[in-house]
Image (tube, rainbow, N blue to C red; front, side, top):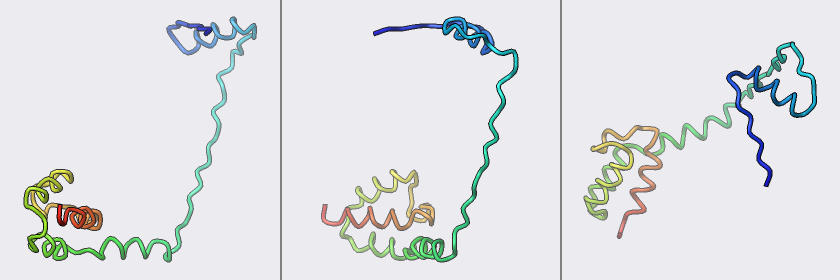
Length: 110
């Protein structure tokens, strides 16, 4: 294994050290910054609509019904709430309802 270390107080000094090591004459010009073009893809409404339907397909009442069914031990429900950083079902962010419901359903019969 070959290890080479360079120590410098600035990037300019480091470039000079590396250039000397490689036997290349460092240029005095600052390196030109590359212009980066950002491309923004437009999403069609057809792609976005199914995502919105999935988010709103699970309601707070669905979660309450599952919890109140008694099929999931209260300790497990509290543990799952803790995983989401909340203490009450009503504090679960609406955007997290589908994943919360899915994980809650997985706790049935455990």
